[in-house]
Image (cartoon, rainbow, N blue to C red; front, side, top):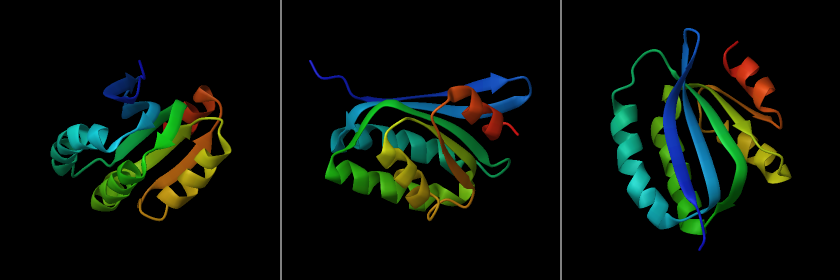
Amino acid sequence: MITHGLSIGLQRINDDVFVAIKAIGTLTYDDYQRIVPILDSAFEQVTEPKIKVLFDATEFDGWELRAAWDDLKLGIRHGSKFDKIALIGSQSWQQWAAKVSSWFIDGEVQSFTDKQQALDWLLS
C-alpha cells in the first residue's frame, strides 16, 4: 500500500490563525483533482487578512508531472492571497521549490528544517 496525499487544517496559536498543510508521499494528478476544488472554494472567500501557511513537507517526496503543473496553476490563481508560507523539510529541492514559489506568491516564502523556527517566523 502506498500512502500519499494532503491534509489541510486551520490551527491557532494564541491570536494567530494559519493554514497547516502536510504533504505525504508523491502527490498525483488525482490528488489535485480532489483537493483543488476545495482549496479554490476556500481561497475565493479570502479578502483580508492574507493567509499564513505552515507547509510540512517532511514526508513529502514530490509530484507527478501533471500534479506539479496543477500545483503551479493553483499558486498562480491564488498567489495574491498569501502573506507568508513557511515550508518545513530537509530535502535540498525543497529550498529550490520555496524560491520558485516566491515568484508566484505575493507574500514571503521561506524554507526551514526546524518546525519551531518555521512557526516563529510565520507568526512574527
